[in-house]
Amino acid sequence: MKLWPSGLQHKLKRLALLGLATVLVGCASIPAGVERSPQDPWEPFNRSVFEFNEGLDAYVLKPVVAGYRFVLPEFVREGIYNFFSNYNDIYTALQNMLQGKPDYAFNDLMRVVVNTTFGLGGFIDMATPGGLDKHKEDWGQTFGVWGVPAGPYVVLPFFGPSNVRDTFGTVADLETDYFFKYIHPVGLRNSLTGLRVVNARNTYYEAGDLLDGAAIDKYSFMRDAYIQRRQYQINEGRDDEEPTMPVYQNPYE
Image (cartoon, rainbow, N blue to C red; front, top):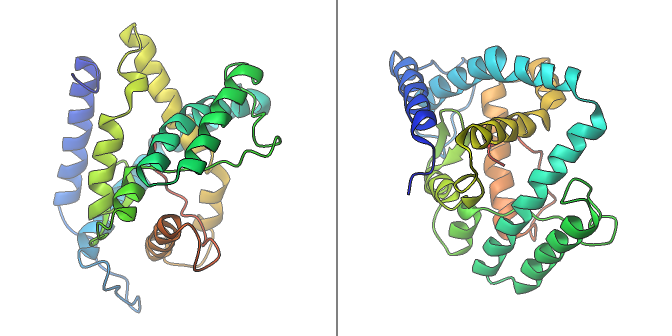
C-alpha cells in the first residue's frame, strides 16, 4: 500500500531529487573558528543540506505560514494544533507501550478519550488542564530505548536534524502513519497533509527569528541542541534538565 497518492508521490520525488541535486553541487565549508564535533563526521555535506532546508524554509514555508497566521485567528490555529496533537497522542501511546511504559501509554490514551469526547473531536485540549500530561514519542526514541545507537549526526532534506538511527525512525514513522493513508478523496488527504506541515512550522515561527538575529553559528547550535534533546527524550530526563529545543522540527510532528 502506498503511503502517498500517486500524484503527490511523484511531486515529492521531484522535490527530493531537486533537493539532492542542489546539495550534491558542492559541500558547504565550515566557518573558521568553529570547532568540529566528533558526532558530526559528515559536517560539510550536512551543512549543504542545512542551507538547502534554510532556503526552502525562507522562500516557501515561512511565507506560507505568514499568510496562514494572517488569515486565521489565533484560536483557530490553536484548535488546528490541538487536533493534530490529539491524533499524535494515539501514536505516542503505541510508542510508550513498545518502550515498556504502560502507565504513560494509558495516560496518552486517556488524553485521546478526554479530548475527543469533551474537546470537540480534539480541537480543544481538555486533558492537560485535567492533569493528563502530554508526551511525545516516535520510532527513533523507541529504537533508542531498545538500545540502538544513534550513529553519526545527519541533516535530512526537508526533515532537518536527525541521526542514522532516527533516519530509520523517520521512515518507520511515515510507514505507520495510517491517518493519511485512508482519507478520501485524495484532494482532502493532500490538503490535510499540507495543513499538518504548516501547523508544525507555525509552532516555531517566532523562535526561528530569534535564532536568525543571534550572533551564533546556527548550524552548530541546532545540531548540539538536537543531539542533547534526543538523548534527554530517550533517558526520560533522568540525567539533566531538558535542553534548548531546536527550531527546525520534523514537519510531520
